[in-house]
Image (cartoon, rainbow, N blue to C red; front, side, top):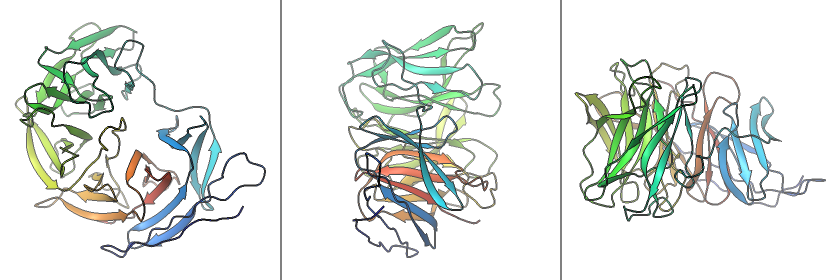
Length: 363
């Protein structure tokens, strides 16, 4: 294998070094085999390589990153003492929503076996198109372990402006809830928490919602859920208006409402017009893990990936990775690739680069 690529360094904050090595032609292979180059820095360890014709990043069935090329080929990433490697695979975890559901919608799978949900009842009554087209969802459908389904249908003054709901665990409930985005035709987006119901009892229903942004065609992108401030309560997180100087905000559930708890400005977890919404996550990255998760999210330019801690008086950035070229654009996958108990962060850029970051932060 030989390389013909470019090498560069970016210095910011804790003098982060970030290296790209483009691909050389591998002997006997019909495509350019990625040579992963390993770099050490004050904020952990990094690997990067360019994948020509990168289409998307998915998750393999075991949760590892799966690289999908425009040719249709799929490659699973692995990590061991020799560094990063790839192997061809035929399977990904993500499932498309059924026929007749939201176009390009993804089925959400709960931890509980057999419980899933997707966005349904496509509609064009909300003229925004921030997720790649003008079609949004008028309902959420839940499938239970016995194969039966029930739906929550919205009134005509709102839509679900999302690609897939997210199952999240909430205290005091014996089942996972669904986190999604409701957009009001006259007031914009609101973070929404939904009880999925059960096959022999309740239908899906809204159990809590944040106040809408207040302006039509203003959107938010959920990040996830976790006790990020260590107070024993689960916070729900989202980036508010990620296309116009986004604000990372945490919410707590109080008396059927989602109440803002803490926030930090200057972040974006979505490229306008893209159907990729998973550019951020809530995950415990401490070494050793302490049970209080951090938030991983790009800055407003999407040229810096940040790790943010919500403990203390105000949220603060505790690690960051500065990209020399390109912007965060492809799915962020959280997976403990090397089995050391601390997950690695894998994501892709709009310049066809795959990045793997082990932040190595300590409390």
